[in-house]
Image (cartoon, rainbow, N blue to C red; front, side, top):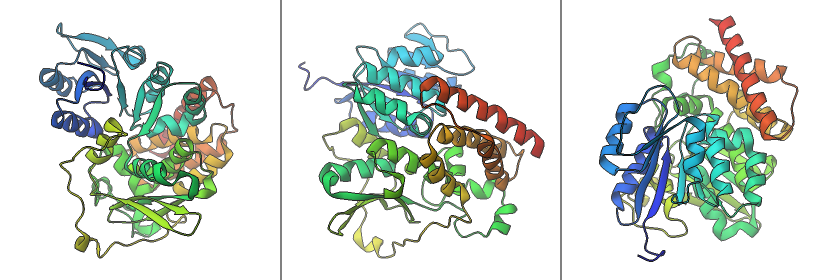
Length: 382
Ligand code: MG
């Protein structure tokens, strides 16, 4: 087989989560295009074993608790395992859908080895954007976004990069879009987990309800596309049909639309620059007669405002915001704190932070500091 027709070997990190499952659907659909070379999971060993039985990868990595006892493939552990496989000469595409900041390590290792990184983990760019961009500038590797909004903007910029003046990210507004602050005070976990349009993991669903998810995506967009914060807008669009828009120099506005299904951006990240048929149907225009848009309310959703401020400050503020949010959302999911305590925790810790250097070691240090502080704040609230 020559290289043009050889199947692309995919290392899928975070294989048992929501993005991981959708990625496996795409691989299943194109067995002559893709093969699963490696998989990782945090702790869901049972689900990982099912994937291994079906796809027969050569490597599996466990990053959390639990033991995978198999002899039919090579089993690695932790950060070092992710790095080894991301840089492996047989891997073509590394799709990173792990949770949390561990995603930075295979991202850097893969870029250094000239791989395509399909990035579904936004913490990597939020916390370590400057480090990733520096690595990318010196590398033969590519960074292709998997997040639906960033995939949309990436595709639009292929056509209009030189004329684009402003990026617009859409946000569904989440399940609490219409609630007052008083109502948010009383909101329960089940209300928050009822997302209107996207079916996603629990952490990101909570982040959609606080609009922190959109804040993280503003930071992510800045590092991916190198637009300054004031040239990145957010618009609430509850139907989630339009994923991203560009304002062009001449006043034109161009939009990318698709049915909200993560298989669309995942498939594109794997096949780019090609576009292959998809099982996801294009939206019917008569169904689009009621698309609506509204400006985000920064007073009811202060974490979105904070994300802009953190991005402008740099010096580790986005890393601290992200890490603190991570701990606070976990505490909310565990039923330990209330919904508005998430933002209280984030603001308390960010306000204590004094800034740091923009290098990997210092940013990791800031991330760990923020997690410790956030746990203290959470403990004081329960
Ligand atoms: Mg998104």
